[in-house]
Length: 346
Image 1: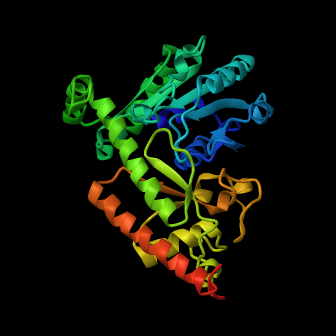
Image 2: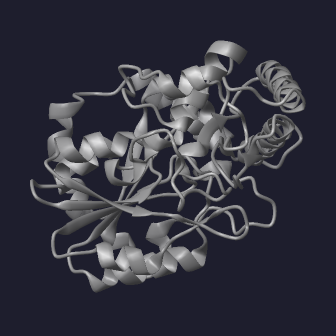
């Protein structure tokens, strides 16, 4: 759905605005359509979360701007955009003729932060249905990412071109999987496992898993940023000592090593826990190169290149194994500090 929407709407030379950090697939799909990604960073706030810089977003809009991609709940930060933020974005969209929004709402049923406004459909704001393509999928909601069944909701003006292009990109989807999904969607509205609906059960479960992973990370000295939806959690690893050899050693994926990549390699090889460096979710200008943290980055004080993405959409057994690994990491860090650190760590 996302790919065909971009291929249908973006022409060579068009600009597409991305809010950083962003789901990394966006950039490649924009470039395949001949478009140019324009990066507008989210800014850390005083509540351990992220805000939209409306002035920077307004400045990024030019006569070449064709699309803005909005992702809420947001990958990789877990941010859920507020109504006020969405209304501000809608006002900017109204001010620019021809500007369309792709609202990526694949995590819409995983808003778990208690007391939040919940998920807001951007297309539901005044005047936005005719300017929005909403894309979503069954994969995240029902844990069936391999089914590859998604959908687009929007005005006929844009859907007509998508319908024409669809057979050339995906001639047909799997009918049994589509049929199964129609039944699942109906049943998901019914009471499930003691909760009012399957969706409320899902959000409750993810909230519990988030809290478990948060506690494990904090025990290892990794400060976590607020996660309100989805199933990702960002951690600031700037206070975790990483062996110097990992900071110096480049790889084919990252010839000039950054601190977040070095930490992720070290964590995987030495502790058996896989995570993702958040510099992969930034454009080349802001991701930068080198091993030191950027001063203006990410919410926890360590900079963008000290932020790492973890996920908690795992079984309780896997989360417990990860917690044990983080306990070991925390113990090792304390021993290093008590022993004076050493020249081999940084």
